[in-house]
Image (tube, rainbow, N blue to C red; front, side):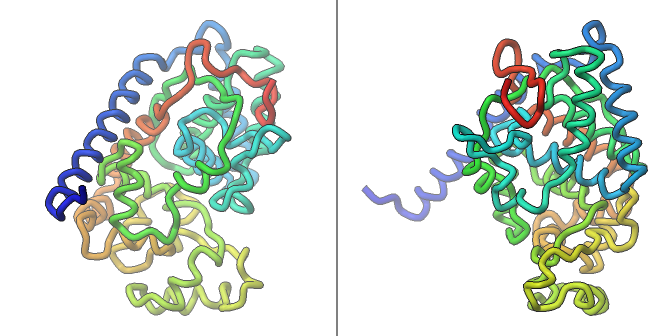
Length: 327
């Protein structure tokens, strides 16, 4: 029997509430299994080793800070924080590296490999690739001048990856606000956490292919910004890989410049500007644009929560010796 309009809306709301409660339950269970002192007795130099490597990588190329942060995000949003994004394709694994949101875009794999190699030399088979991603993301934010938080540890690495999930679960730069809210809600995040996590775009760069339509066809963009961007991003696909800063004002500093840009219609991506487009998240953007400390606090809390998305713990998964392949 077909549902009437009212029943259909009620059913959808009930389903969303059910999915949110399931994610929340998993989050609470994961939080109980992870701990900030997980490697204190088994690899006491783990955190300092990761920190030193990240500081060196960011010093060599400041963009790498944003790349390492993005690696962790793209890992956790696809079936949980299990380092599946690091797996190369094999005859039995159709990995995530070549999915549409990742191919030619996600980077930093070499830095993670270097860190893993260093850790294997001092405490072999102890520190997971998933934990390396989580700590490296935090250390990258700090290296760029942003907030710190205590990363909970104890994740293990998956033995498989999902090309399909990477294509369907990661939020796209073309999404409107309602779809962004839905995508993040499915992972257990509130609108406030969606806006806070989006602040990661206060650093890093994006390819022309991701913002071409915005600068040529959208009207809610500052005209001077659009004109400036067109010099590096023509209407030709030959420019697809040309890069522009996500935050044109302070792209190598982790600050609240991203939100200040949004209130001036200077968001680079369509999905960015949607957070300040007359919708329910406008007030959150305004608040963060005026209060950097509030953004830092909420971002750190949201990152901590994201790091607890469906981790493998206990005897599940494995500790990969090489992050790009299963043992």
